Length: 94
Image 1 (spheres, helix red, strand yellow):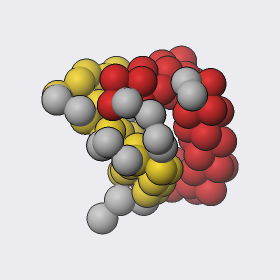
Image 2 (cartoon, helix red, strand yellow):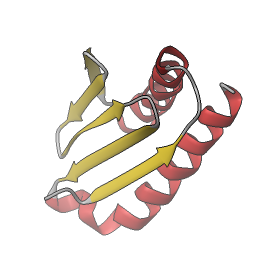
Image 3 (cartoon, helix red, strand yellow):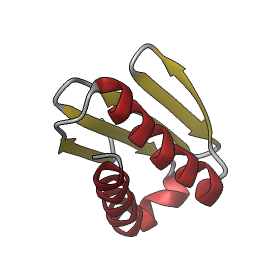
């Protein structure tokens, strides 16, 4: 079961929604030292203690994160930070 789940509706073409997801992933990579790769419309990311994905569909971007034991204490702040950043990049790509 995921520790963090976030979904945001969008009205963007899938290519622009993927660009927004990529921008959010790049921010996450810088902040949390994540590596990522695309598989279709799903961006998979990971590092020690964190793994997850961002899935882009025609109507929403959904994110799921599994946190390791040490990071679970920071779940709320991580979730708020990622949710805010996802909303920002979606707004910038309209």
